[in-house]
Length: 359
Image 1 (cartoon, one colour):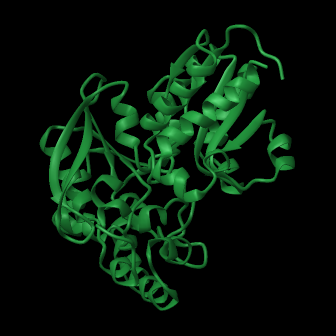
Image 2: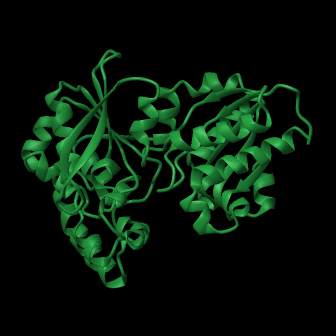
């Protein structure tokens, strides 16, 4: 392929699972790309869909980071950060649920025991901290949680069903997630995401039973059955609790894109480089990479995907209009090296791809 002598390159990846935050991935790609094409103009715009890295991505553009000590998923105290933005009409808190109840906070690999025990009390404590600082709008990014408690821990931390509803009645509450799963059933939180959080078949059934009972409480709070709502199953059912408390659900990727003025960056780019941990069929269904590629195509820019692994067939990648997709694992030689030396290997991949554009 050929390219102009100087490209305007927008680097806007999501996080690479637990190995690299979106901010770290952006820096690695920029470092590698510049090594091969030092004259290109690079714009850094890390992205998020509401999962891990949500706060870091937004904090790279605005607001003040506040650190709190809250309950982790298994009860032990953890340090969690949220973003306080007082620059708009309404003081806004951006909370990343994974900061308080993420898989990385377990202190080890997930198991059936942790899948049953993990709760969202720490997220409720972050919401309380935001309220104490006068937030009139609270945005909760959902994703990467170790929990499947339906948000019962959050409700408990806010004082129980009645008090939680009263405290949030006049707050603009937003659930930021691109997960559309309902709370219950074969597409629900326990069935789909429970195994990723350590649940075996028996534990999945126990989680489903527990959340079926809890969903009756949430539906009573909301005055309607919320268990089938899109996004209710996000973050182990935390989405359902937020919806019951009056939240409106928005696309996390869209929210971050708008908050960081991504459209302006895309419009100025010749080439958009994005990526995530695994580029698969799910990627093209509303995740950061899909949303970003759509915006790039509309602006006449080409899209390159750099991912930890690429499992989507080449034909589907081409059919989607993506210029190319490349896997870190291919240049690293193994999944182990790709994960343990993620930043270096991603930079190597970016340098290699940039060299192809310079050919």
